[in-house]
Image (cartoon, rainbow, N blue to C red; front, side):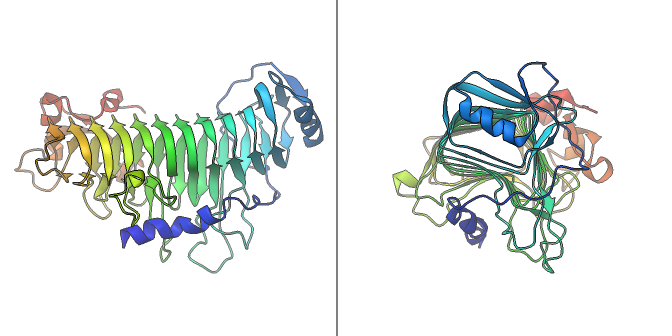
Amino acid sequence: MRVFRASLALVGALAALFSAPVSAAPACSGAEIPVRAAPSGEGQIIRNASELSTVLQQARGGEIFALEPGNYGLLRVNKVYQSDVTIRSANPASPACFTGFFLGGTANLVLDSLYFDYVFKNGDPHFSFPFSIGESRHIQISNSVFDGDFAHDTNSEADGYGFGVGLRTWRSSDIRVSGSVFRKWWSGTLAGQSARIAYIGNTIHTIRSDGINLDAITGLTIEKNHLYDFGGAAGSMDHRDMIQIMRVTPSGSSDIVIRDNVFDMGRGDFTQTIWAGGDGKDLGNRNMRHRNVLIENNIIYNAHVHGISIHGSDNISVRKNSVIRVPGGHSTPAINISGDSTSVVIEQNAVANIIGHNNQRDWVVLNNAFIQNENSSKRGFYDREFVYHARGEKNGYNEYGVRAGSTVDQLNAGSSLANNYPTR
């Protein structure tokens, strides 16, 4: 059943990846815009969409275009520049806004401190992708906001929940998304058949289904992101994964790093956290297997057994992660590596359970701190392992520090990110 649900929700999205992006819609007004970058004072001032279109056609490489506030509509670029061309807001406190973009066959483009705004229209499919990168390379998006919208007046379970896909990347390479916000989407971001994809230091929240969806990626970095407050539409066929690595295309992914992230159920619904299932494929086929996977130093606050679940993979290291159950939800999150995986290291994690280890000769499992919140008289009980700086039901977010002298402390297990608590 889980495999069916994991594939069903995205079949339509993957099938539609080469259709045109969503049309521009009235937007860019009256919204809170938390763009992070500071004004730099550099660049040629651009005042409207017509001027921007002209200078992008004339640009060769190295230009910086500083956009005055306003609605610039739909951005289309299909040009290979010799070096980086930068489009940024002249004043990030009042950023330039786009209602869509399509980068097709583009190289060496930087989008910085911009506001990307989708407005729901009745009739849009839930996998609409107003912001899309296809068959492009060396694209950087930083310090920007991908602002989705809630469905309304559909007379369906979708009403009141996020809609569309925040960013779609397909058949592209060297794509970096950093310091940006994704909010109010069906799915935060989707990438497939691509190489060297990086999501660094982003915030992803108020998501109906999946945060980061991936398929057939060679060279993936997901680092220092904060994912929280996911919420599903009751009655829909949605599942919820904060990260899902799929095999919809007949290929696995390789060279994967998932490190230094915080995954927090917060005030939202439980989700699967890091999920790389079999998707009903033949995992005896070498091409279908994931390879070279590092999952390191993450903190998970959730309430579903699939905390870190990786199936049919080779050369896996899962180390120094804190996998913590919080109240509510489905079950206690665990580390689950399918028994057919090879060259597996699982060490120094703080977790309730490790599934899949059966004394395989090429597995190393050691110095893990086993924690639990069910029986105060047994070893690893949360109250003796953690200091509660913040809890979701009270504060809206979770921060569990490590108690001195605890099992977690003695084994130096779990994520070092907890050393920064309290952060607020």
